[in-house]
Amino acid sequence: MRKLEIWSDYTREEVHAIFSPNTRFTPQAGTWGLRGSVRIPDRAGDWVFFVTFGKSQGEHVFDESVTPDGVLSWQSRPEQRLGDDMVREFILHDDRVNNIHLFLRTDRGEYSYLGRLGYLTHDSQREKPVYFQWQILSWPPPSEFLERIGLNLLPTAIDVESDAADVLTSTITVVDPPSREVARVGVTTREFRQHKTPDYAAQDQRNRQLGRQGEVSVLEYERKRLCDGGRGDLAQQVTHVSDIEGDGAGYDIRSFELDGRVRFIEVKTTKGGAATSFFLSANEVAFSERHADSYVLYRLFDYGSSERPPRMFKLSGDIRGAVSLSAAVYRAEMIALE
Image (tube, rainbow, N blue to C red; front, side, top):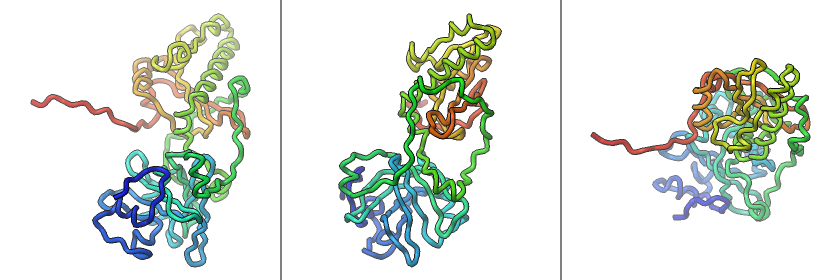
């Protein structure tokens, strides 16, 4: 039996043998031989997607694509509605708990394995079929892979990368935090067509340069705030702790209130919108708890956007009271048995 390997090619029968070896495979028939979305046996919430670009079913031609950021536009079966159980399961998919494996082919033969998918959004106004956007979590692939399978990426607007010096801190707009209500209600058809938004949270986690640029912007913002408040003496003492010590302190910037009390600032920066999730280390969460009276998280969003100046909201105190925290990984230790 073949093993599952990223960027490798498979027939439907080989995929079936990996995920459902104890069932019968019938070419061009049945679930594994014909369907585009196949539930993996005995693993609730796990699926295999077979995607063929340019495929049609009856009079319906599937309009599917991949962007340079690895955003897959995908459609459900033509008869499915927003309220169908399978569609609701896809909308509520959590890639930290369950797996959707993507096998994609163009006009060059077999299916290629592109790894797992993470839900991004769906079109809340159209159904029969329902339109989804998924993040290909293993993206980007090797350039030779795209050439080999003939995958043409959907052109998208070019992001303007901003150096820290190009982001004018005076233009940062402070706004209220977004609503804490989190619901996958989808987006309008217009938004769905215009914006193929990648998983910014994962990109932010990998992009250390973006994080540093945000910290430098907040550093200058804080110095200006203190100077505008008549405390130039304190502005000179604002310290970029993460630059001096690294990431182990539990916060990024040591600043001050106008009365001289210390303010510990953690900076989280994203190119995405205000509702984009972000990652916190156990150390950062614990620090906010121990220093709740002096801790503030600055969330910069729309950072480096060519469409609008960066904006920011602040979360003060123990961060556990301001956001919903979910474990991305567990550390397991053996316990003594009595």
